[in-house]
Image 1: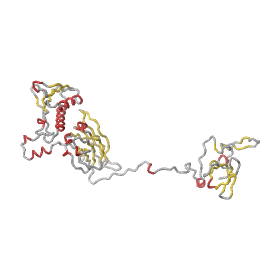
Image 2 (image 1 turned 90 degrees about the vertical axis):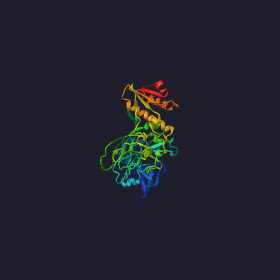
Image 3 (image 1 turned 180 degrees about the vertical axis):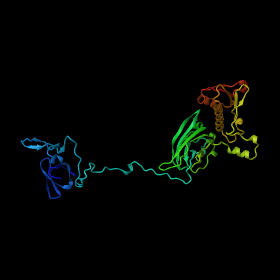
Image 4 (image 1 turned 90 degrees about the horizontal axis):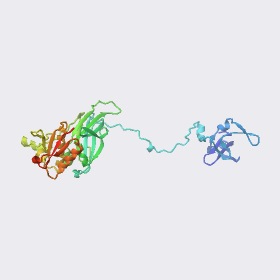
Length: 391
């Protein structure tokens, strides 16, 4: 700081030009009215020094003299025209640090972005892919009407990219696409009862890797699963799980780096057979679907009555029975879609008409290219529908 520097006061309004010094700690500042104001030197900050230390273009004054031209407005005691220089503290001048940001802005450390990423913990012996599809009822006491939450559980030390799909005729529709962390789980979706019909055939594709370290290359896997949707309505389908607090139906997808194909065998029926039931009376399961009967005129005839599909319907509710009948109807249709012109008679009976209405709705939306009509009244009465396969 020297005579001629323009300064401003730190803790008071005002400023001026340095006109002299009183001792080592006091500076005389000449204000716009020409008065010298003594100020402690640490309460003054230099705002412009070049305009007084570098020769300026001179211009004539009123009295014939000259004065230095600058952007300092003597009348108002402030800079005009160009942008005002940023104040520089005395401490910064003495240290030689002329940083524009003399005072740090207030900031909250909690507002800083989180860049830390924890390294996932690895378990011994878990360097093989093991992936499970889990269904957890929101109210297990009302399992027949409760919504169901779906999760993927990854029991390996690998990150697993998962593509989860369901069948739509000959095509597939995406339900979930995401990454399941090592030894963790991820929420997929919440299922309502009307969504369960879409889950008869599902497909899961996986790709596994590790981050930040080398790893053994794992094969990309595709697992197609045929779900027994009647289990969604049965309490005994859901069991205690180490991954969830509520009873869970766990469907294996990948085990020890290999795709899993679920086998749908009814445990109660298998136990009955093992206790000495005659082989010819073993109940039909989903592994042993009922076969359509071919008539002489090459028309396929398929009876949808539950007693023709299963030896017994004990323990099944009306909803369970309907779901199973519709599953068998779709199976027969899908097996014959390539045979254009093929005629299939589905015997559903008269009853309350619930099965027939569901069958017709399925034909309208899932097999809309096929045609249908009431089957022969003379042969089947009012309880059968004839479908003609069309491409």
